Image (cartoon, rainbow, N blue to C red; front, side):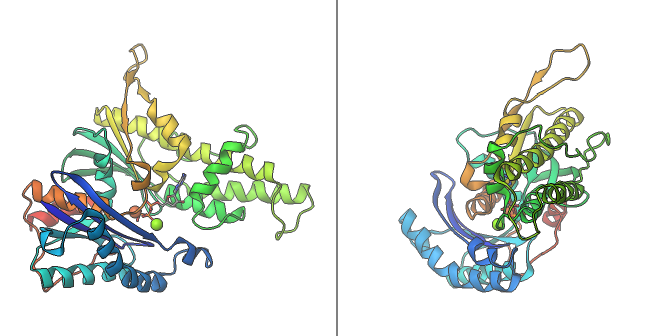
Length: 360
Ligand code: ATP
Ligand code: MG
Ligand code: FE
């Protein structure tokens, strides 16, 4: 079974081919990051237009990469939501037009289901059930995943997503958008004890998180530094202080995510953790979560947790995870392929709503 996957929910155009026997046989990606960097964030109108320009050439490139023809494709999966309305529409319209021309079924995929299943594209794959930590630019959520299609939301950020916090904090200290990756590189050079940033909701006794207050703490630190060094708002921060801020901010976010991940594992009783989404590329988070243990009672031996990550290049948005989620649906015989000729997008769409959608 060969599935073409189309991703266009935000600022990456992804086109990939997943073969249920051979695995991922093509993965083409174009990121609009440089285009949006000039504006300090994603400009929805520019994003939609760029997806339209890239979809056809990327599909050709994917077919060339896999050495297959249009006719060999069995179904086309696309990101139906959540995401930017216009960007989603570009992918949805393209997918449905192509499927209509080829007379193939269309598989609408939830973007977060794509992220959630992406660790299954790694060499070492998790078995069900597991706790999933979705930690991306738009979401920070814990899900109890019991089986393919059985996802229960058990906790999330009440305000900014962790990735959003990296991007906003990066902006405060003059880093280009999106700041997550570069901020974490500078963090490697910084001192972990230089600043004391808060760990919001660490002791809230639930799986809720909050990251918006952290950037205020960083802002205060930046303002103090400027005052002490007699710097104007236009001046760049001294490199060592910038690195220290990056380190202490990153560690604060990671501490909260790690503590909540432990709580999620204890609450569900699961002993496997799957991490997905762009912040899953963070070195410190990977380091901490790779050697995670949980203790069910004070005198009990700590239990080892097995943690799974997607391949690094599949942490952020891509077509591979969409093709894979579509293929899984075919493999599991879930009959909710859209009929060619009518389609919609769902810019706001909760992951736990997909089970209900499938039964309709
Ligand atoms: P969503 O999937 O929720 O709609 P998104 O698709 O925009 O959001 P992703 O592409 O999964 O999110 O991830 C992008 C985010 O990951 C950005 O906020 C970026 O700053 C962050 N990010 C990428 N690499 C790193 C890193 N090494 N450390 C921390 N954050 C990172
Ligand atoms: Mg992106
Ligand atoms: Fe994403």
